[in-house]
Length: 399
Figure 1: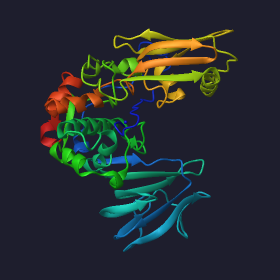
Figure 2: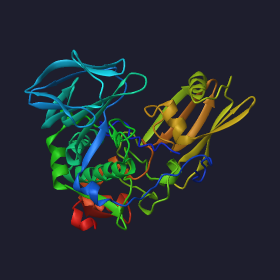
Figure 3: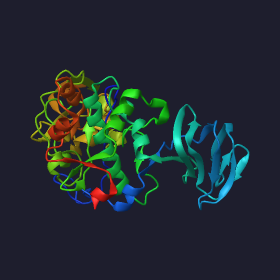
Figure 4: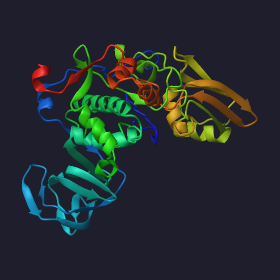
């Protein structure tokens, strides 16, 4: 997710059988799901806090309990001073104590826990990956999770109606992933692959107010939830979800004209890439070419976005899904696949385009402007997710 200080909203779906333009081995993801009664009764979301650190520092200033993976109480106390947590030889160490029955679950009793430089609510769960790194999952209430998401996914200084629209979109996306990933270790990650989540540390009054004002509100289409994708800047036109990823077409994710984001600093962009840079990108993607003769945008969709890039080299040509190529180059450089021009001079390719992000669903700089013009959050959501309705997450209403 990601924008306005917003960096990158890249809601990519890891794919897996065939959508138009994708190979037959790729599975098409569901775009609509039923909302189970039991998930509504316990709206606890599991968030992966990252898997890159072999060690973290933990502390808490309030009473806590530690359980093993089977729910047995191991010990409890009034607080934890700064203590290293790391995995070693099939065990997780909490200071000098080691534990084999994993995961190791630290429950703050609805208080907060400090992990390195960030603070998190409720529960932290520590387990170990095969390579010895820690997998850390924060389990907490869905509404509290959103408090750590919205300050990243929207600018806290934007108008309340824009923040409310983002709150409903983020809540809808999170609940969709909770349902889609039931039975997995976690529902969402804390980075741009899902929505950026920073815990209590990032919470702001204005975004908390937007969450409270829309408490429990999600978007549905004919009673079913869908992934309410969003991105920074569409550049004048959003696109269909199935044009970006292998996913079922959805009436509320069909794309359309947007006349509200032209004041975004990302509305137009230009980047120059050397042939060496592009060859390095291609090598990381598994293509080893000695020189690049031409780079072309192919299969342009109705929004103006490329679905594929074609790279010609002396021995032939390669066709790569556009979003895969963009992310491999870097979304900070190649902000979108909505390209207006590609030029080639010497050993340098220059790309000029519009917008930032995948272009599906809600345009964040668009909602900023709409709120400034007096649109309500309900009108904003209807504009970017046509045909959708707001439903309140209350079990009797979902029957």
